[in-house]
Length: 116
Image 1 (cartoon, rainbow, N blue to C red):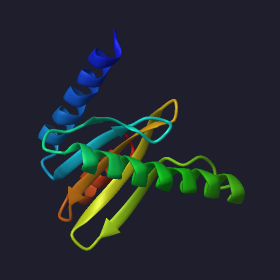
Image 2 (image 1 turned 90 degrees about the vertical axis):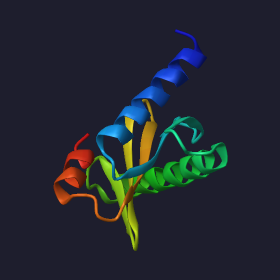
Image 3 (image 1 turned 30 degrees about the vertical axis):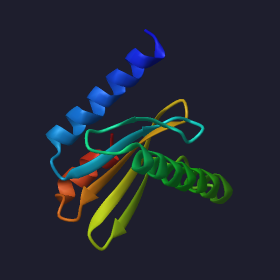
């Protein structure tokens, strides 16, 4: 599988995630070096790159904090905002998925996304 096929598969996966969880408004797959690898439909390139940079920085801070304070490995970074949530979850090899959701996302769904 070449890089274009892999990116297409990840775009498809993010699209399916957004379809199955309607409260997700934007989703971005991010490489271990903080670059946007894939994005859900409707997310422009600039927004994808901004979300990638923000989520990469946040997960880096969380990893550093966890290591410094001996609290064990980081599973997720979750930020509550006035009108939404930002979820950042590592997926493998330092890559991550970042999802921006509506504020009224169900609490049980937040728990399920956190366990992904």
